[in-house]
Length: 99
Image (cartoon, rainbow, N blue to C red; front, top):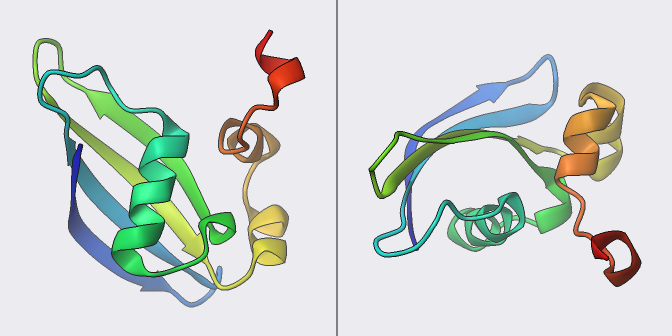
């Protein structure tokens, strides 16, 4: 999986950086939010807890996905701004939840 940042924009009002990215995943399925979140944290050198993946979309038959993510100044700011369903989607599943 290869991650490329398409654009980054600071939203001072919501205390976050809004990122658009592309993920190339040749020979693999669409990567999970958790995988993309981890790679995004490495590429941008930020804590994983501050990143929330909003959307990942793969066009039919392609090995390229595009997505949007928000990187907050603090995890508490993210919990204040992000909808509950986005927070839950970005939370790693525990073993009990996955069964």
